[in-house]
Image (tube, rainbow, N blue to C red; front, side):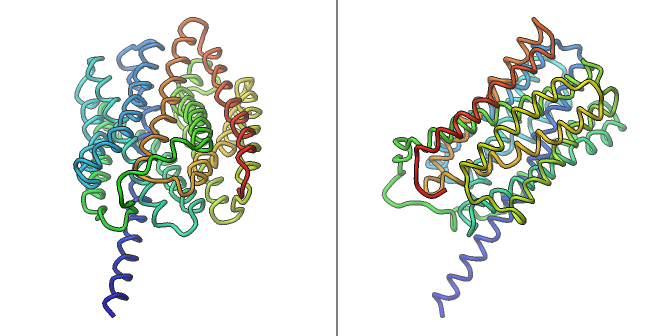
Length: 386
């Protein structure tokens, strides 16, 4: 009787943790993807050049990188609950700073804190959902669908908030960050989350598969973050889309992402991970190259939709393929190391754009797309079931 009650309580705790992962990843989609629109607003309001704009985006991703390593370290010192509460406050504090200051130094710190919030939320949600889902690939796709839904809504939120005052969008995002933080604070985490006895298992560091997947995620993060961070600026600079319409290109991208991830989760489940990643990589290369050649708004929108759909399943499929290697320690290495791609590519695009124009800078994003294809092909040598 008592054993049955214990199992029921454990199942209830696991369901609560999984649902908290879905809810917070939805809010994180709003907060993280809004950075691309916010940085464009700050560029217009404060007159930043492309190099400074790229620096702000890169600072967010430096914070994202730091958060993963900090989470792996702090969880052992403070416990998972306290470390999560400390790190995920970055969203609220970072956006609050953006709302009250125009000084470049503080804005860099604000974007860094938003990155801390983003990175710690990704790590935490991956553990909460991965450890409490019977089908990891499906669970990851549902979780990332929640993120895509939040990203889909962010331009509408910013546009509505912008009608109040130029700084109100950042204030609204700070409120979203506070709600995310409160959900984590009231979610039990120490129980139900898988923890191995006998100390941290670092054997995953010797796995070739682990590093191939990390490299693939490095390229995926670089390609995706560059598009979400720079596309609004690119469309405005090129004149393909102007005014409010350019802001809603983020909505097009995340509508495609949401649709594709829901199809992978419920209609066409991925059974051969390697083949799926190869086809997704090829799609990213073809559609992104086409996007850079587009000269009309409808062609650009259709190609952006296709590119986003091709990219949609890459991250959840790669993370799910880590399988039994998933732990606080392994995610604390894999996700931050992979996120360094999101630091490098926006910075490279900003530097190239400053010297050779925004179109040339954006063409550089074909490099991580090609990297995804190469690494997907290399995973063949791992063998075993997909």
